[in-house]
Length: 196
Ligand SMILES: Nc1ncnc2c1ncn2[C@@H]1O[C@H](COP(=O)(O)OP(=O)(O)O)[C@@H](O)[C@H]1O
Ligand SMILES: [Mg+2]
Image (cartoon, rainbow, N blue to C red):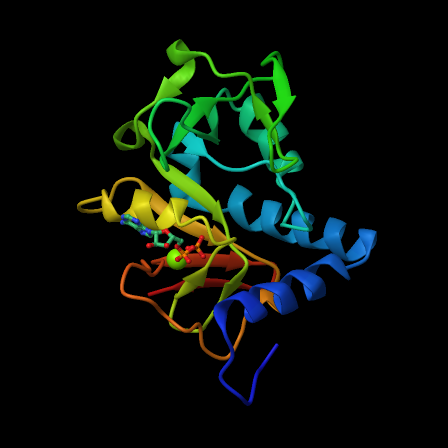
């Protein structure tokens, strides 16, 4: 989706979320399958043991098939939780087929918090991050909570690798970047693996 006029971040979020919600069930399934194929053939993923991802919401690329495949490989899978003890922070919680789940205040499914199941981001090999919009430079616009910016600000060096996950229709001409926004080093869409 390309804009000719500069637009505010909130308007861009709304426009792209609307486009994403308009994807049909079969377009969603094809997107998930394309991304699963790509990750199943990625030699880096094959070597990773601790993988954080997200439970799709609002038309985000659904990673359920990927999660099943990772579980079959005995990989450790984590999903983000808003940290109940640290304001504005997100933590990563182990996610297994047996994890007790609940729906959080945003309507997103999440595991019931259990401190023993929380990992530090340094222990993760990769974080597959949702996003609302991105551009060809790797700039990311999220839902507006700033959680991934705060996570990325704490990462020195290469680990964990944070990869944005998106439908192709979430690409916009240019994300209006703010000082705190952290660009991504990789983004995966059904048609392209972007690296910067
Ligand atoms: N490293 C950080 N430390 C403190 N606050 C941050 C940090 N990164 C982002 N924020 C805050 O999070 C809020 C939302 O960030 P924004 O970039 O608009 O959301 P998103 O990245 O989810 O689209 C902003 O008010 C911003 O000040
Ligand atoms: Mg941001």
